[in-house]
Image 1 (tube, rainbow, N blue to C red):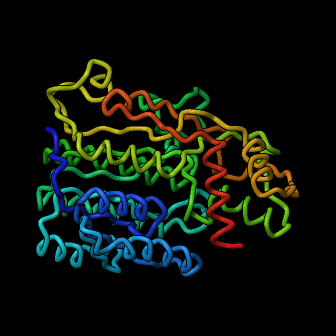
Image 2: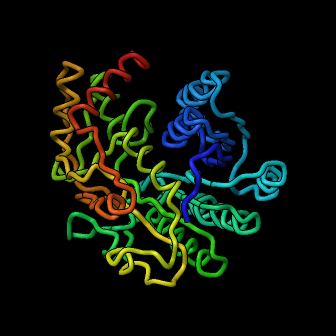
Length: 346
């Protein structure tokens, strides 16, 4: 079943987040109507949240899609239902979540409440209102300490090494159940390390940039023996958009995809979204040094609990279905990120 690329009504949860903001702006520019919800709960990133929402609001009135925003949590099922009752929402993209490996170990209950209970609300509402497609954020963290690279959707993912990873694996299982029971088309997206302008301050690119510009030691875990599949935000958004308009048809799967989802089964699938390259963390820092024109003070430290040594995406499944090929390499992406950072913070 294809979804027409004519004007559609979208709901994006987590719309003041890094990915949510960029996706909302892209869909509005493409002429779609977008309703965003976010609880704006993290006061530590108020400046970033305001900048993200300003970027969307500033695009209004240019003859494209419409934008509405509600300050809500996905744990507030009744209020979200009211939005559905008043609007003919066709596609839902759930990006709202408690993010981050380390905080999930410190604050497990909040992760369970939002990432599992909140996502359960979204599934129930999508089922009841018969949305055409539910896309939701999973994570590369579901691969845990997997040693086989690149990470493929066919790999075993039943050994998460953090509670955050466990909640994302749980989301995938919950989505499958709703797809199976109610024929709800769902697509889970396993994001790899996403970076770029207006990015998350709790992730390595922003932490490293802050340390370099403030003359603070850059914390380098596992004594620098780390690799990450850094994926630029524009590539991530392009990958999501390509998924939106191609919900799965149970009876028209390719032979390769049928290994993950046997013919005649639920309209469910999961994709990796990454650049498809494992970059040495020290090389990433070298690029930051180059574009900031400043040496980093490096503090080498042991591996942190819940962390993994490498992430590396096999994106062939998404390419097979949508033709998606990431286009922004690490050198170009870091340069663009640093240019934004200088303009925004310095």
